[in-house]
Image (cartoon, rainbow, N blue to C red; front, side):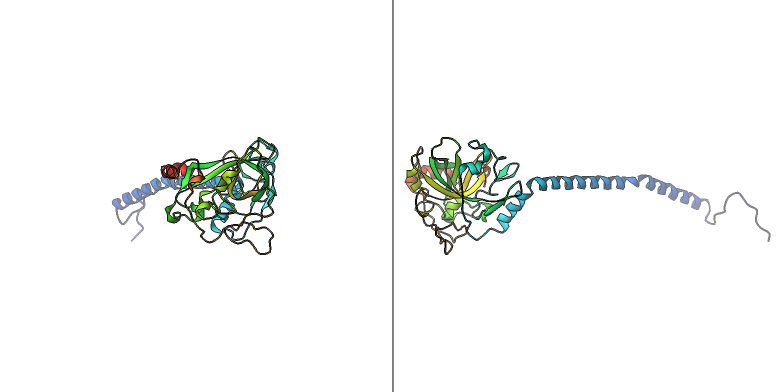
Length: 317
């Protein structure tokens, strides 16, 4: 048999329907190809978002990196050893702006809005911080020759629980404690005060409070003055929103005393003066004495119980 004549198109053994089907498949393939870039655009958007997140993270780390590291270190690895107090003046704490309150001028500056220890209520604050200039600065200070101009119970700043930085949980016997606050100034001056606070968690732990010799929150009432009584204080430097504090304040004495009153726990062996040990066992917990405040104890407790959680959180819990 001779060759078949060409018909102008390739014969398909499956017939016209098969050709039509192939065309349909090709059309579908073309439609898929036209829609293919969509996943790539979605992928590009995800990559762009990821890049923005990375850049923002790097910026935050650059600004707050030291603070974040110190916060984590203070919570995860609280120090167990006593800090050695460093003698400073109120002017040393405030920096060249003294007697004005300034964060940026102080050597305790650690970030745009932070200075001193990372958390004012920590039972185990770090002995040192790295400031904004990269310098290691001691946080546990002793200021001599100051007077206590005012002193009161902060009824707006009370709690019945330890803060998260100290492990949380209720205070012993579900007692309520309030911060005890005041202002100290250098003897011979009327400006340049530093706020002091005997912290509620420290009181609940038995480190400060009535009849605690090194940190008696009641006896100190007898030593308020307009500059006629000179005192010495120990504690940790902290910047609280718009002013400098010694918070927590850990000990006080009359200036000129040869030794500091004994702390609730023993001091390191071989030292002539006791330094404060920050992680003692649970100490004695006592009720406030009526003489502690300017209002009756029942009224104080009632006011403390009505303090809102939001007010407590906003005050640094």
